[in-house]
Image (cartoon, rainbow, N blue to C red; front, side):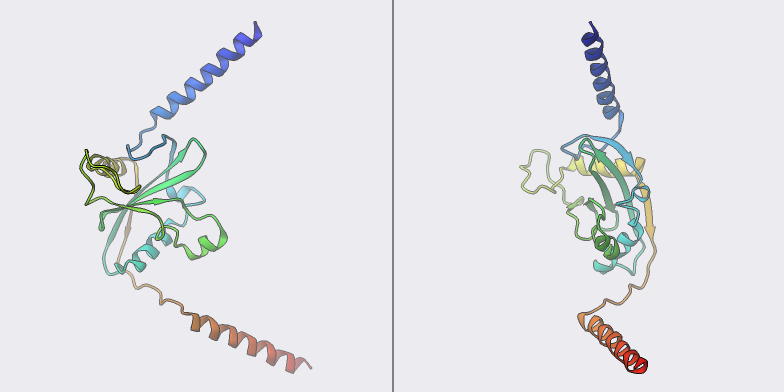
Length: 189
């Protein structure tokens, strides 16, 4: 008799969680259904989004313009997060997994190296999908509409990018630090 109540309880919980997942609005661009939506700035893997956007802009040589972005984060049933970032100026959708390790957070280039989809040149509805990042016209439109409704907007005004460090710059710094340490040793003796 007790197993009957336990089975019903498990069934109710499973149905409730399935219904809850279906209530979350999401664009039809995912093969898996997201179970939660979040603002990227509020998630530890995406909280450096402002720096990531600036690095994306710098590396794309577009820092002289006002750049508009829209981003929305999702968590899937396996617990993994993903943020879709739409660069409105470039008609690009980035599939960003975020920054995990200390080095990737320090460099803030994970968005720049993320897979991207071309929203302007999406494919016809009956086309064979050759690329895993290709989107159909309806998917591209749905992603844009979704982000307009639920996403976080970012506007990055024109800026002067920091000069790139070269290997020579790092070598010179190491040399200088080594010289100072040697001089300290001589003084201490």
